[in-house]
Length: 362
Image: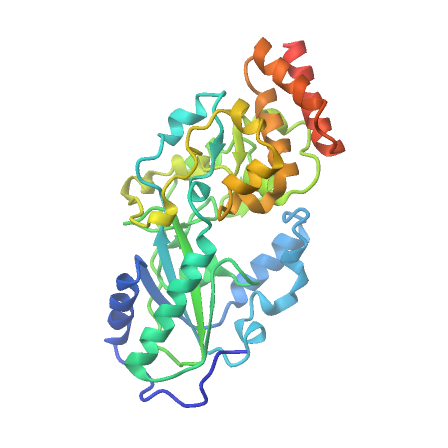
């Protein structure tokens, strides 16, 4: 249910000045853009149902678990009338050049969003402060805040609110911010004036489709998650399909290729948030060093990191694949063989054996 004080707001905002008020409040809390939408997601709902029917979600069964709550906000949070959407830049400053890193197979590539602290807590806290500041302006109202933390169609909501357009890679794009940003939402019981969507500007460009290592973008605006490296290294809990393993290269947590190639990211900004700064040297760490972490080191060094959610087993699985994709070298083979005697997980052993075979047969 909505967090509600039992009193109606002093005034129901309906003027053209209100979006400017939101922008001012949002920017004071570190949000780079704010927009408002209604709760009609009928077209997005049909796209979601078609996508699920094709099985493109893989084993992310939670995409189906909540039924229509994901596309019908008032079913998820009864009383919702409007949604305030926000975006926050996350690209870490002073990080190793991502494109260069992909050309150094001995180094681990980790998606840029995961190099610092987990964003969920920071953005939720800021959204709470945003809602409370808004109550100071207009009086109490009911609300709930979300950031990738519930069955919410964040991207279609962001598009409706005018924060950007859906790119062909299925990420949201902005002319002045590219795509390196997080999204968040405030579900409210206020009938707010909507901000207008923006037009799309992908044109004839297919760079993101062409560059995808596993060809997971099977058509413009259609992603087969089962082939996506982000899905395979983060969401997928089992064995990575053997045919796809060589295509992962040195990517051990997520993949940014479609964003790195996008022309609009020339306009992206680095984040001033200290929480998003690189931690533990993860922007250029050696695979061999990460593979030797004990589970205690994994949990300790990655405390507060989004990476921790995949667990130690998948961490080792992903690094084993990346080691198998390195050019053959006696030291790498020795490391794989030595670690094999210390690993008990059948799934990890399968990937370690695959990597060993790659080094022996090359």
